[in-house]
Image (cartoon, rainbow over all chains, first blue to last red; front, side):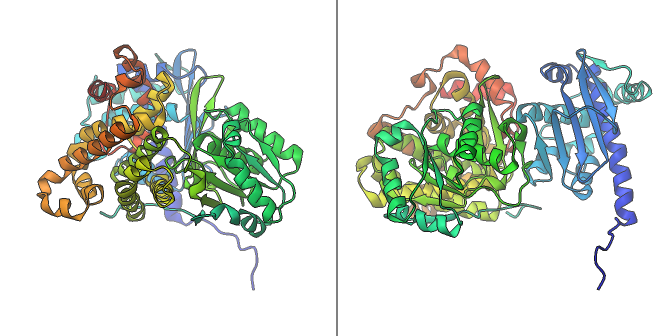
Length: 180
Length: 394
């Protein structure tokens, strides 16, 4: 009998993790970009205490993304943040996360299905959910948002400006934040 | 209705009946505990309820216990941490919580601190973040029939520094044993009986209609409402009716199991905010707000409310009411029950009767929107929606 068998995730799981990592990065940058473009996200993030570090992650291990509020601005710290998270949202598995990250399932539905754990202030978590709904409204077309958002998406800026803002944030990753 | 995915847990052993408290000593033995810490408050000691438990422990062969009776009306971080310190210092090996929601939540909070080896409950704020092989043995003896805390995996504890109520959610918070003994609630005055009973009704109605509702939580909610329909008014008419008291204790427990797994919604979110901003008693807020919350949710949850008519009014009314009318009649049934409680026990029916003013509403709405319960309400709500509900209930 063999003991201590080493278990290795299959290739499909590794692919899913890579996809999740990419979407996390887009989500983080989207949040930062929307704090610049959209007054509602700006107001929500403005209510978070200075130094708030929000991490979206998948258990166990990476992928993850952290967004931090510093000097009144949101910054994405990418997947290698070295700051402790004040709010940590952890999906229980990559399979729990992917339908949400790919816009097939709503965030509230995901919480209702126990797909993620939340460590930290649930009030800030509620605010984050409202922000992510707005971000999803920019990132995804109406055909998807109708299914996953609790209300029809309302955008204060166009998709193109949002994508441009997202790329701009990517270009300045960790250097320039979005002013609140 | 079957959700695409759901989770359900209720591992608390329930002891229900006359003299159920007498079996606590045996349950401690099963849990291999001999030196319990009894958590309660001074008022319950003065009323003699704690003595019932202490005598039962002595009769059951438990020689020594420690009593912690400093739990305030609102459970707080400081009290939780102090309780955990007391437990460690006195070498106890189990917790027996005797009281209402605040006492039970304090005990749950201390259990987190003790089990994790921490010193500060605040480290564990959030949902499903506690990990442990086994918690400290924990027996809950509720002295009200409303919160259902004896069978829930949730605790609300106040952060006295930031003046906010923090939520802790984990299946690990469930007590090992829930003891429902009618002696523990028969002294409840009618006003409190009504208020806590309507809290239980709100748990059941919201759990049945929330996003996280599932077939198992539905069953518990339906059973809870059946008992409330039959026994709430009886307990208001005769507080010494032990059958009615036991039935209401069971109703609260059943509703607790239901909402521990299906969660609650907008009525609780606004009610918590009314408590935080204007010190409105939780059960009062629930009774006042429930019909308004149901009306707000009607376009998405109406069908579910219609199903509840069977339990709110019984089979004859349900069968004789056209399907399209059932949701509206279900709300009427809730108002009728609240009216009964108002006539018999002086329950308030409007927020203005409990000290809320128009000027308070914006702050209440701003707090409610960030309450975790809002996320599982069947219908999305923004601040203006919440203000609409508050104004209707004022």
